[in-house]
Length: 106
Image (cartoon, rainbow, N blue to C red; front, side, top):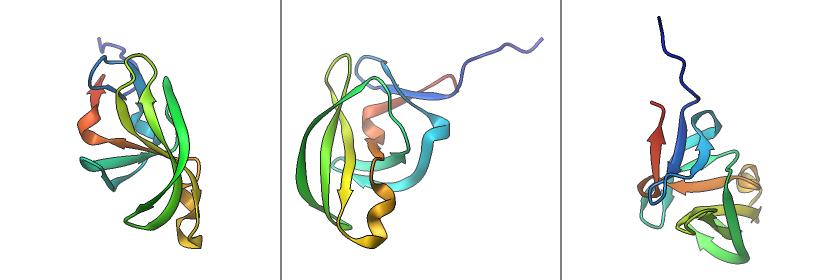
């Protein structure tokens, strides 16, 4: 009999707080501050810091750092606003750095 397990998710590397579902990945081809990063449509159990303008590889964006809701580890950032029309699809989405998250239920 097959065992039932929950959905595949990603957790904070520090405290294992669940932060996003695998099914919410939009792209794995992003660059974070510390290497590869994933673009997610949603994140959970996180808090966002103050909004600030940053010049990233794809131009100027208004972003807010994203922290684990339990241990406050910085996991990535949320795109609040994109100034370039070609980057508007990122608005409201989350970057979570691969080095800051771990797989659960795989």
